[in-house]
Amino acid sequence: MTIENILRETRNDGVTLEISETGSVRASGNREAVARWLPVLRVHRDELVAEIRARSCWWRVTFHDGGVRTIFIPGGDTREGLLRAYPAATKVEPHVPVTGSPDAPMSVTEQTAIKDWLMSIGETDSGAIAHALEVCQGNGAARAYVLSKTETTGNEVK
Image 1 (cartoon, helix red, strand yellow):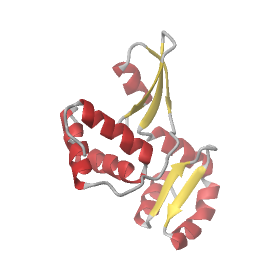
Image 2 (image 1 turned 45 degrees about the horizontal axis):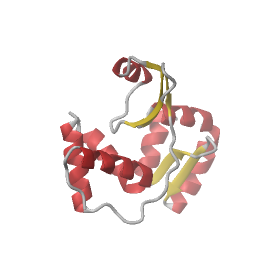
Image 3 (image 1 turned 135 degrees about the vertical axis):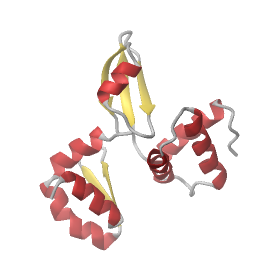
Image 4 (image 1 turned 45 degrees about the vertical axis):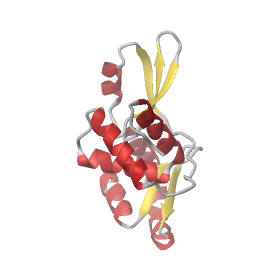
């Protein structure tokens, strides 16, 4: 089974895979499905970690002047793409923020603000928008970050 198949089939089974703070794979979701997938996930742990990091929406960018910036890119990007976008960067690495579950589900107003912001920065790919909304639904840090961007672009969020 390929890593791509594992990622697709776990998602279809209601299992969410992410990198834990310790750098391993964390599986959550449907309890029975998670239990079924754990043996496969253990065998392919290192490959899964590498692939999940490669698809990361979060990046830590270090600049020539020593500054560091953590960036959330809803559609994901490659290291090379980020180095092109930030020519003053000396290092770009995937970043796994500490994720806290949000206190409440996203409101319609928040979803609309996030979609509007994504469109305002040129993101029109429906898959990337859906992925960003999914990340924001379950990740308090991502949601707070993206909503902070909506506030700075003039979209009102209550």
